[in-house]
Length: 112
Image (cartoon, rainbow, N blue to C red):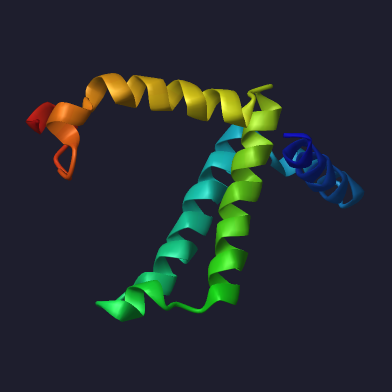
């Protein structure tokens, strides 16, 4: 767990050295996540079958890192522990998607 805090500190230092905090309000961080997620999706665009799983790993790492970086910064801005909020969401989803109904199904919770 200490490792993720080190990464967040590195992100903050990188941002602060460039005086970019002024641009990192919640709206802009959320938009940046969305934009970077679109760039991540582009890696998979028009691919089928095995090609979907065999994308350029360097590009995948780069785009995923961008998504995660902005997500970490947004969480940090609101004093949210990323592991805690993900764990809470898993618990909520466990109630919405009970194993006996959801196992092996891609249906949304209100369709189970």
